[in-house]
Image 1 (cartoon, rainbow, N blue to C red):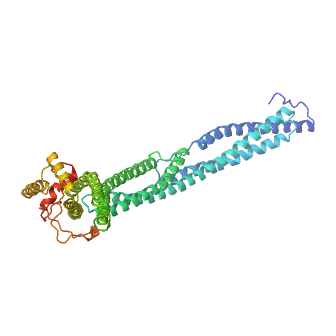
Image 2: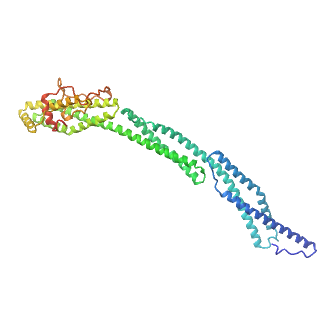
Image 3: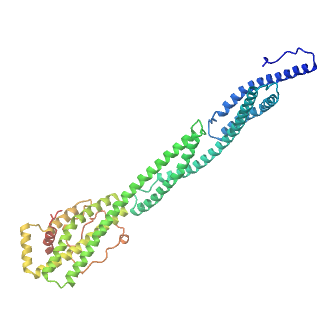
Length: 457
């Protein structure tokens, strides 16, 4: 800028004043160059510091206070340079109004550009400093929200894990298992409802990670991972408990459902038999055809009844003593009812055939052709073998059922006793299907023909 500075070659006052003015202008320009040089270095350094993300070593209040203190140091440094920046602005303003300093448009544009650049960078630094401090403070609020939410979730999680650790799902009564099933179904719904809270915690962590607000020690990350893993393990365990409880209760309900359906069928047959036997005005042939229909129903249901008895015995082996007593009594009740209904069919068949010699002869011929053994003898032999065994054996096949010796003949059967009213007494040496009554000798051949099955089956 010395190229245009002329030498003072006159002694006139105006000439000296002009030289002095030029010297002052030159001094201003030198001061501006010096201040701008210093500011450029500082501006570059402070902008670099402010543009760096805040790094947090750990997730706690002390770490936040430490980062706020560092930011306060930066803010003080900025404030200390405010005077130097203001000085540059003043020099630029003086030069812009100096016709010698701005002798042409190019020099004016240069000074104005310098002023605008400095003003933009200074304002940006001040804004970044304030934003940085506010971000650190906001980070602490976000941490507090995350930690509070996670603390509440973990408190629930610990209680839930204690509940899932001790389920009442093994070696329990059926009624207890039903209540436990209801309790754990409600518990499973509660676990799924808590998933919303866990997803919120994960969402908060993803925001912290996206905005570089997590700690380098990875405490926040570990907390989220542990919470996800524990919730997943909890719901898997509860699912397994529910599967075990449902399997146990479903087996019993399947047994009870099948038994009830058989009892309903026996009751319907009992009522139909009463109608045919006492109220029907049909002849003997028509009644015999109806008895043949009963025979077909009995044949169709014999395997179902035998399978139910086997299933019931398996449940007895797996059930608690009180439940085993109930199941055994229900099997005995079913056995007695089968004896009663089938016995009525047998006696009615005998009366019909005794009044119809042709039918009786046909029946006896059929028995001779099939060479069927007397089921009474087989049953007596089965009872003798069963009595000699120490362990309870399975009840005899329903196709071998023979009614006990009865007193006055009944026309129907009372409603079966409910499960809840059966006394809880369990004779471990007894037999589920055993009967203390004696068979009627003349009914044996009928049952052999009725079943169409091997008497020992």
